[in-house]
Amino acid sequence: MSKLKIIRLSKGFTLIELIVVIVVIAILSVIALPRFINLTTQSQQAQIDGIAAQFGSAVSFAQKQWIVNGATPASQVDLEGYGDGKLDVNDIGFPIGIDKGNSEGEMSNPYQIGKNEKGCIEIWNQIVDGDYSLSININDAANVDFIAARKNLSFTASDGTSHDQKAVCYYASTVRRAGNNPESWPYIIWYNSRNGVVSTTRPDGV
Image 1 (cartoon, rainbow, N blue to C red):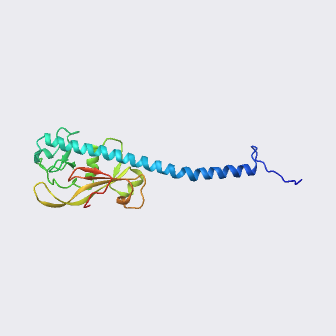
Image 2 (cartoon, rainbow, N blue to C red):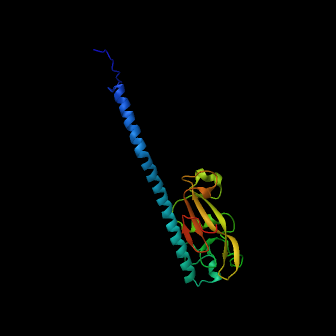
Image 3 (cartoon, rainbow, N blue to C red):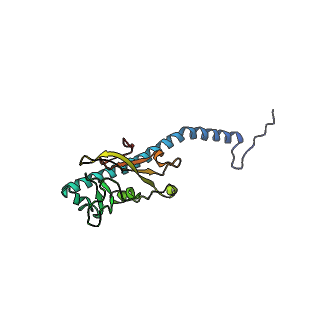
């Protein structure tokens, strides 16, 4: 009879048994990992979709409040009856930031979002519930939930005049960022202030 020695580990497993266990774990990992990644991706997309839906509802409500207030140029500044009364809306009643009025309380530029690059964050803070952190600086991506920015859009205003203004916001989730261009990241919320549409799809013309 062959004097084959069976190597045993301290807890009673043979080397062959250990190898079998490792192979089984490896096979299960190959099968389960893609499913886990897919579930994670679906969960992240669902969260973004939920925030976008909330954002869109708030935008629609703001416009309705502007209409109730008379839909006048004077009612565009510090929208009465909405939140803390600081939100400003454009010529068709969609949110464009805060502190957009001049010293006489009139809208200085009813076509552009914000007075500066922080305009998109100001809109978000006025209408989105939830403890989310935002920045306009790509260098902050590791420490915030979203990177926000304005984008130009060519459009015809309600009075028939043509404009090319920063009328679109995007909010790029930092959860799966790749590269230094937030517009290429997989989870982005877009807001078009010219039609009030909030979606996860890039608007036409942007």
